[in-house]
Length: 145
View: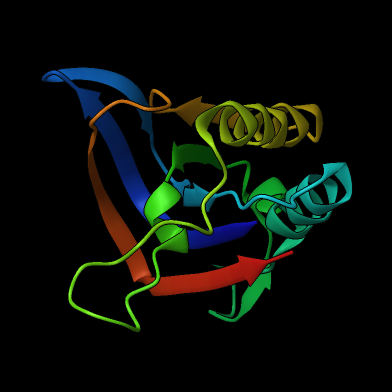
């Protein structure tokens, strides 16, 4: 699994001009799943995400987690994270998991994040989405299992 974690002041996702998920202060996650991802990969990333210290403390140092700041997560499924553009001009997506597996892993990640005490909003799996957010910092971290 690959997850792009972006600290955000606010964010929203639209499908067909309708807001389907929105947050204030928190994280925007772009989540990619590959063929051999398993429960251990999902558990590892859920734990890493909720404990990642990328929010500023009172001294301005990145020392606080999403749990510490009581922020929310906007989670977006993103199969293009497994796009391979090393050859030619059009990326291939052979390393991205098939939709059934990807959806199962993506939904399980969101479930675990909620179980760890974070409010999670999502886009709609498999839909064309518009993601609009303000990256705070900017802070962007790439996590892989």
